[in-house]
Length: 233
Image (cartoon, rainbow, N blue to C red; front, side, top):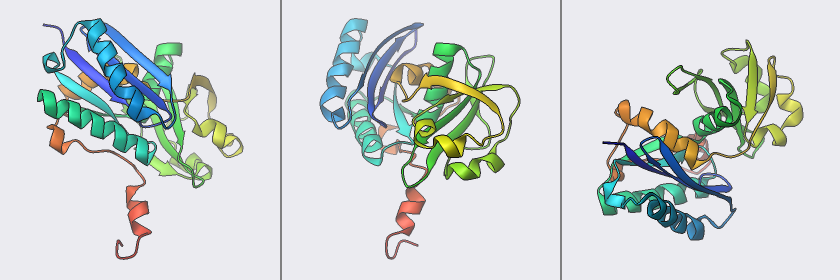
């Protein structure tokens, strides 16, 4: 029996949904800042209808767990939890940075990707990825929020050609130009659910599925935010 997984993502300015049924993927994606709440559920209905699949026939529901916009990540996980609760589905949190690495491979077949999302406040959400032979991705070091000027000392691997993904490369051109590695643009600016749904079976096989009430976002900057509030040291 073929695996059926639905993925939803609103963590950035992009709004996207994808349905995987076996090896087939049906997706919808739209650049829609501040319109996620009105766009996402019609997209879900559209891909399920096109795939001839009902929500309760899915094996799991994947969602963009972040990092990204605080509001966008919260919207995405809230909608995903609502869908999962109603259909009694396990949930899979997928990294937005890893999804951009997969998107870069989908377009350019690059197996080394530097993903950077503009995190504002002079920082980027950062992940350095290499692709495994089975199609899964390994983050080198860890995902982090960091000032671009500090990245050179955090690089784990610099050999070969690296493709770039994410809005951070446009936001911090001069600072990131100093990185000591060969790179070129991978053209991917935002995560896309069609790439998350590719990563979801790997997460499912690793046992990362959780009940809807235990699904949680990854902000990367959440501890920094709390420390700025009185009494939250």
